[in-house]
Length: 328
Image 1 (tube, helix red, strand yellow):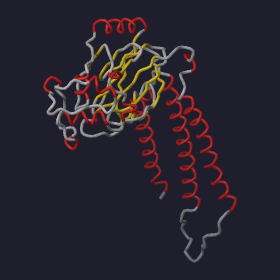
Image 2 (cartoon, one colour):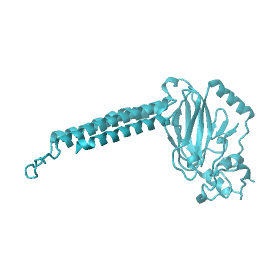
Image 3 (tube, helix red, strand yellow):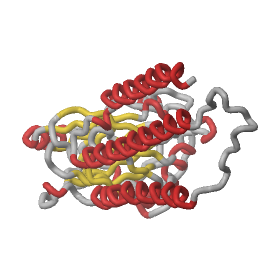
Image 4 (tube, one colour):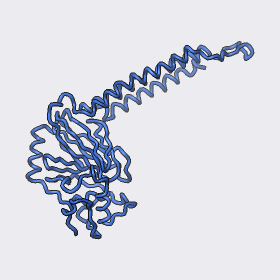
């Protein structure tokens, strides 16, 4: 029986290996462009090697058992009584082995988790650029408080320099992720999660929300541009001098559920609201002001900011910053 099935088993195992390896080669996480992503890639590969090793051992033992204890000709049921007694020695072995595997996987995993909370070691002496990454259904808003710049659906950073992302959300819980640069971190209203990232070479990398948040979640993406230092400095200077100022009216419209194109401003929304403290109240009040029903969330594929008009006079703030608000 086994001899007849052996070619089948070998074919299935070979196909599985080909599928796994071909799939891995096309996945962005296996082509890291930053130290954070490299650490995660190495951790994933270590886990895969462990799993392949375990699979090989299981297949070998499985083959040994079905060959050694197969039903042979001439052996009747009355002639053979299986030994049903347990083996304490074997039970100890197959209890200890998984414990060893878990320990061996836990040590590098815990080490990596602590390592990823800090700036990359090779550039730890360089002051990081601070960028607030705010999710709003279904757009990404990036604020540079020190440069006084804000972008929507794209972010520019210089290569070989640490960037500290302060991640939050204006409404539903999201997940900030640039697979080739680093791991994902959740963004939630009323709190801030920090993530250090660094790009080792210039390029454009795809970023996205990896947490399901409704109808347009598939389009909740952004572009992560790693620029050469001089190109980044030139972009900052040009934006500061020529960029459009972000008005609160424009920012309110970004709170309406839907997608928008890339945008650039020479001021930030941090003058109006801090979503790391706000707990989603700002977005709810803005949507009420513009007549957006919460259960109709996601009825438009793309928001036309020019056509949006408030339907009633509703305060969008609960703090002193409400004095900045102009009614329409």
